[in-house]
Structures are given as structure tokens and as C-alpha cells.
Image (tube, rainbow, N blue to C red; front, side):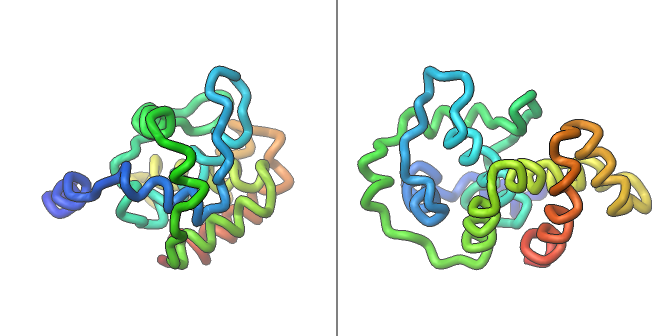
Amino acid sequence: MSTFEKEVKDSIPIPELLPSILASLGLRKRPNFPRYHDKNKHRIHWAVRVLKYAGYTPVINYDFDHYICGPFSDALEEALEALDWNEVAVAATIDDDRIAAVRHAIKKGDDFLLALSMVVGVADSNKHVPNLSKERIIWTVVNLAPDLADVAEEAYAFAEVNVWAQ
């Protein structure tokens, strides 16, 4: 991490911005945290991961690990558990192209959002690999999650235009 990234990471008041980020993404419903499978909670993690790789500075400090249900951030989970969800219900939205793109990805469905999150994560994890190809990234996503085979290529194309071009 560069000095600039560390300064940015340390200077952003994430808890104050999180309600507006979630409201802007259309994720105003409080996840049911005790349940193992909660789609809204997963959507939040997947969406924030895509925002991170799109260069959206307020979420740069969330590190994600890989689990069966997709990427997961312990720090984001703690922030969500501590969040006053009444604030999300009334939070002002943020006008940002990256948030608008991720909101559009959310509307395309859970499989698409998960595939997008995996595409950007695989690309970032393997950025040191010379000549990392589109085909290799898509193959890796499909190998990890065969159910996403029908949306992986579309997710890659979406990432080219809406995540990596930012």
C-alpha cells in the first residue's frame, strides 16, 4: 500500500458514509444477521467489493476473503452490525458514477453481482500475472462458481466499462 493510499485509508470516516452508500445502492433493508444465508447481506458485501475495485475511496479499507457464498469482509460485517439502520432509511444518496454502475449491477440480479464481484477480485488477485487474459479470468470465475457460467462473460464486459475504466 502506498503512502497516499494509507493516508486516504486513514482519513475517511467510513461509519458516517456507510448509510449513504447503502441508500445510494438501494440496499436500505436491514440484513437478518443471525441467519447464515441472507441475500441482502451478501449483496452488500459483493457491491462494496466492486466499489472498492472501481476506486471508490470510502470503501478502500475493506479487505475481502473468499467464502462459499462469495467475498466477505470482517470489517464491513462489523460496521453493518453496528449500523443504525434507521439512518440508512433516511440517508441522503450519493451522486457518483461508480455507485450508479453498481446499483445497475444489483438490478441485474444476484448471480450477475456475484460474478462481477468475482471477476474484479480474480483480476486484482492475479494482476502480477503477465498477459492475464479475459478468457483466463472468466475461466477462473466459472471454475470457482460453475453456476455463474452464463453471466461471467457479461460481468467481465461490465467490469471493463464500469469498474476498470473509472
